[in-house]
Length: 403
Image 1 (cartoon, rainbow, N blue to C red):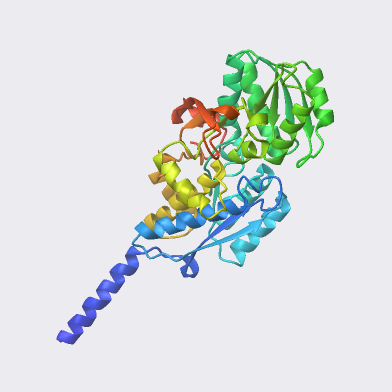
Image 2 (cartoon, one colour):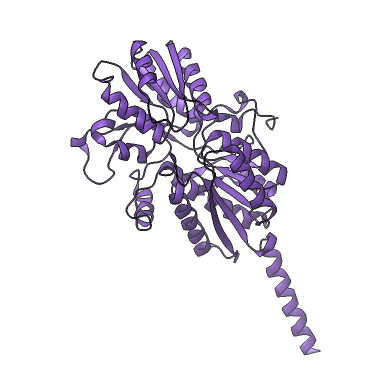
């Protein structure tokens, strides 16, 4: 009888332990980092986002008692919606991927969000900007983690108009992201009493901006709004300098600028640029400590806002899997919306029913070369935009999930 009692007790302990652990498909939580690994956005996310995701897994496993097995895989979507969708389907159907993170290029993100919804998985988007991800294209399986075109427009656009930049000309990347950023910024300019004198659209990953810049120059607009990103932003700013556009009295507004863009330009060309971001490596002790770990694995490359966002998203996702005791995508997203997010880089922040994660945004200006005190010391803070003002009000997005 004593042996039977011992066996029964052991079984009870095993059952209790099993019920406390997450029930994950295939015995492993598989995270897919999907982004541009080789083209104009590779420095923004690329391999650095994979490093950030693995750092999040490492930190989760240090503090978790769930004993989850976690694997990180990655792929290059080449900034093509069909390629991104194909990879997502294979990952979900064949390779056992539970969640996809990053996904810059808004057209790719919108396509992957739809596939994710069909498959009942999870998408944590840090890389794409279109505010439609929490608007008309919102999904119960997608969280828009980091920034969006509404935030960028209302942060940078309104600040510039209020300080006298009241006539604009847009230089816009001709795909979903550029269109959304132009649309949202134009609305802010007009709302604040400004005027849009013209706009021109350029192909993604353009090399020659001369004809577009000549049109912008001829418009006499006070501000040329760059509704593009990555290599396109770098090339348009470099060529604007060659045309003497800023020397001629017009200003450039970088509507989406990353640390890697400023580094690529150099402070001599980038100084004075005003833009909005949600994270910078030199914000506080926690961000500096994390950056020190990151650069040790990236040959000294400092992290962008996107890479920090990937770390935050993956860490909070794993906490939600542990809390929900499942890796079912729909249930994990529900858990994230219930608990909100909390991590060393962004602090605490709610996640709304439309999938929008909420946190502060910051208006930065690029330092003059004489103001920089060391490597990647590029930004000075002009204003903090509180979390409750940084993103589009819930009722204005048109998301069908909002009751």
